[in-house]
Length: 123
Image (cartoon, rainbow, N blue to C red; front, side, top):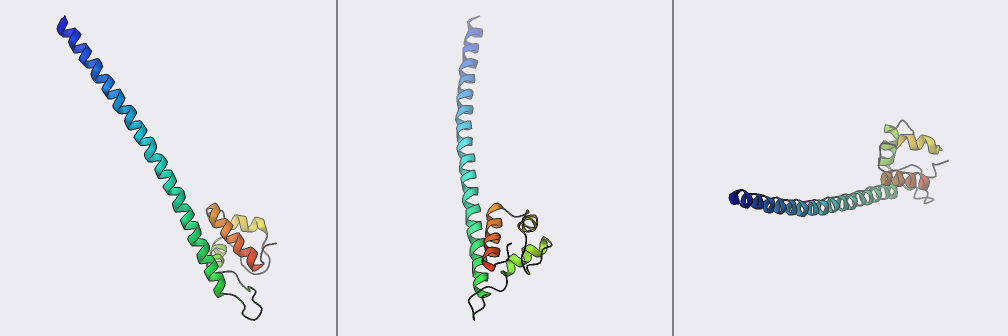
């Protein structure tokens, strides 16, 4: 009988240690997930900044040097629009542009729309 009682106490002590370890592991997992999400947000911001810089750099090479105004959109923007079935000539309606850009992230859409606005192609 005493052996049974001692064995039960040992099992209970072991179960408590396992429960404490599981709780500690849960806390570690939550921290890892939070760090992963924060890292993903930073990467998204970096990618958006790089995309915007590429668009701005391309825009700088396509300026009309006589008047300092853009005649066309940057090549990457024109390619994105062409993928969406939109020609970058003349005014483009906002709804048409939204449909053409729906596959992009929000940051990328903003960069493209800013580029289009600078080119004077948004109506």
